[in-house]
Amino acid sequence: MERPSEKLLLNCSATDPNKILPMKYNWARKHYKDGVANNWTPEEVNMQKDVEMWKSPDALTSHERRLVLWNMGFFSTAESLTANNIVLTVYRHVTNPECRQYLLRQAFEEAIHTDTFIYCCDTLGLDPDDVYSMYMSIPSIKAKDDFVIDITKSILDPNFSTEGRENIQKFVHDLVGFYVIMEGIFFYAGFVMMLSFLRQNKMVGVGEQFQFILRDESVHLAFGCDLINNIVIENPEIWTEDFKATLVANIKRAVDLEHAYACDCLPKGILGLNADAIHQYVKYVADRRLERINLPKQYNVANPFPWMSEVIDLKKEKNFFETRVTEYKTGGVLSWEE
Ligand code: FE
Ligand code: MN
Image (tube, rainbow, N blue to C red):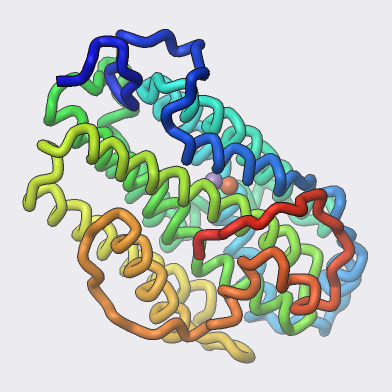
């Protein structure tokens, strides 16, 4: 039995949610510090070259434009969906103060990400009515958003509580939907497409914005996985074979939807990039997510884009892209989730 005064992640009425010290969950504190060390704003990135490229009639092919627009369409609304999930549902149920400090930081970063797409629309002169309706009008984007909404509906119920084994399972199920599937899988085909453009010196400002977002998202994912794993440690009775099988099935479905999205973004394939390679990358990423939350790998494929690991590593990045302009304040050693 837990001592009555012991801090717990869920259902902890014994300790005051305003008392962050003494600290128990140091991993949450570390993710908070990593987030702060990676502070940035979209206006730091110069968009001049992008504006020239976007407005020039022949600098980009119609397929390249489609790829940029489809990713704008998915990310512009996905960032707000994530922000709402954190603030309206996750924050309410995770009453632990160390985690809440991180969730407030994450919510701020999601506001920065929302701002990034406002900035991209403004600078490139995109029609916001087009971009912000793509989550409804483009079936491959709608399918991803619908799936996330479907697998996170328990905790959106205003009467939901985390009391009891079944409800804790529902909560962890939905956390896997937000953190592992939305932020850990559904963002990654877009990341690899836009960063591949950056490597080819195309839409370099947008590419840098995606690079910053990727860094933030890798910390969100790390926090989400630590939260999930520690809820399971504190509530081991929820981790049944049936429950694990449900989570694996959801992740496999997410890989299929992400593949369909990649095919739709890239109907023909373009230089260095085609939907098959992205599918393999998404499978590789999904295996890493599965292992991170102690579930069995499903695909066993190699990483077709090994350069993505370097993009995620802060220190290598300045040599890697010659376009860098922004200096980070951080001097600490950060380890990023891939
Ligand atoms: Fe985000
Ligand atoms: Mn996020």
